[in-house]
Image 1 (cartoon, rainbow, N blue to C red):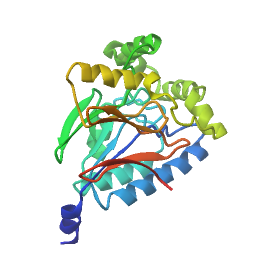
Image 2: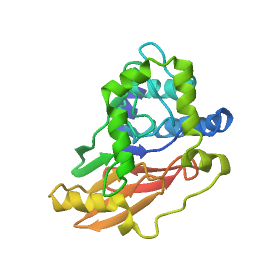
Image 3: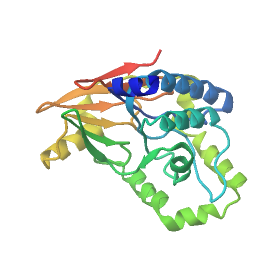
Length: 260
């Protein structure tokens, strides 16, 4: 009876992105993982859906019989939530692009790679991780095609898991995200959102009559909620390296918040 009552009262939809678990080292990552598990425990009490908008892990590759070590606290919490009937959606970002079916089968997640447009309570949402969208960034867009190539994935799978994981973590720990986590740097907020590539991407969508009340992205790490005209708002969720921000839709409005 209690579980049924809680599900009846569940009205909120939660969005969060860019946790980059695994960097800069195991000890620091574990602190952030525990903080994420604490947030999930808090929001599951009134959540009807949870959207993790990409880069949950800083490196993730699924072999046929092997996945990266660690993250058992997070995976256990996610399985607990989905077992209770709360849908949890994972948008694969540029760091966890090689998540295939393990998280779906073992933790019950719903996986997405392409943008999703959905309607809830009379509001329309356009959801995407955000990598490779908008003008510019041609170098990454080329790499993205390489990473998504099935033949390249097949070649990487022939590396021994110890070697493949070591290579992946080596490059992860040389990244900008890793340096932020190691040094506690905060990228701050976007002072000129009109120059943000996702802002221009959103404007281009609207110009093509692809509309939404909320355009929600991850990837860019800097929390932002800005009106873009015609009753639309663009939200960049920030990250869980320095900002620890998330968005919540209460059935009427969406708000960007910070987890204490």
